[in-house]
Image (cartoon, rainbow, N blue to C red):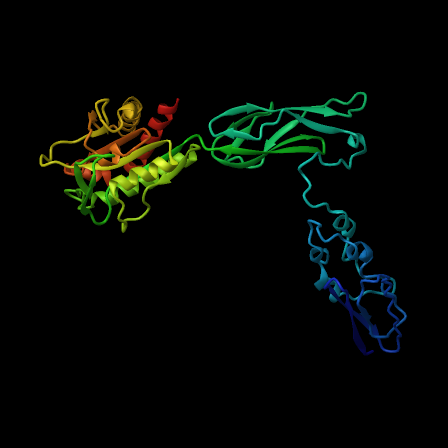
Length: 413
């Protein structure tokens, strides 16, 4: 017995095409039954044929055709098994499997849902609603806040307990009792849920503080001069060339930027906003310009440097700060001294480096032009062979960054 395969094509105005293949034996007749009644169907084309019936391939086509344009689901996804339908070979009493099983859901999708309490599909909670009491819309990284919610519409005998969650756990966490701890700046949603009723509120986590990081020096120094402070007649080179490792030969400007990048990453993870004075080597930014850039956007400034001296036995770290006798920024001396002390002590504790203590300096251009608390950290002596090698070790650089971040935390706490 010979068999032939007849193929039909359904084209719908929504951009969907449905191909149906039917295999019949010799001598049989076939009349396809395609019952699609909708003004949005552009055309229906089938080849005439046999006595077998094919059930409507798109049982919920009306729902698909009338789906609202703003629906959150993609109508195209309503035909996930089109290949299977195309190759279907129905028997005498079989019909083609429905290809739009969830068309009703597509049609009823509501864009933008989630800002208010989500409607319940559960008859037991269809009258239940959640209200978040005194929701907070902004919070600083590092801060905590306890959210409270009230459940209304419970029926007799029902007990209500809200379950709390947060949309992005790398930014914040929340306990079962609604106590939120913010970690880093960003936007999250705090979600209160009872059964299938959901209420959420948008929270903006603000950075703790803004820290400017000035990676000392650059690829090429600039010997042209600038005033050492506002209104000063004393002038100094805009940017000195810096030192280099006695063993590694790595220039200071590369060391300072490497540590600055690690410090930035560490601070951001702790909830601070960071302003990098430079992010590359081939720049020309004077010490005065560096200070002014930090003044415009930051709360404090950390200036990173490597030390050097003719005596290769000298080692250790120190911090430079302006004194109260400084005629340019005397008012910033106490805060700058505190910042210097906090950062240096925490860094030396973390790295086990020798703590050489604080050094008062009133001749530093990048410090004298500051209008915010500032410290210059000498991370170690590049002129000391052992310390030079340490300073180029990535793990040691990470310890430097973590230690300085600990000091900044301490300064603000």
